[in-house]
Amino acid sequence: MRVLLDLERCQGHNRCYALAPEIFDVDDYGIAVLLDDGEVPPGLEDKAMLAIANCPEFAISLADSTNAGTAS
Ligand code: SF4
Image (cartoon, rainbow, N blue to C red; front, top):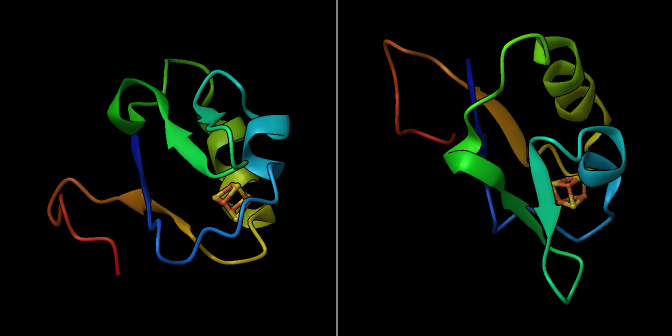
C-alpha cells in the first residue's frame, strides 16, 4: 500500500503527521513530506486511511497499483 501527496493542495495543517508520523513528516513550513516515498509500513494501513480522510485539502490519496504515479 502506498499513498500519494499533492503538494499543490497541501496547506500545512499537520494533521497527517499528527495522525500517522510513521508515514508523514512535515518540513519547516509545516508542509507534508512522505516518508519512504509514501510506502505504508505493514499494519499501518488504517492510519494511512485515517490521514487520507482527515486531510482538509484532499491532498493525500491512495496509490492504485494499476494507476501508480498519478495523483489526481
Ligand atoms: S493534512 Fe493534508 S494539508 Fe495538512 S499537512 Fe497533511 S497533506 Fe498537508
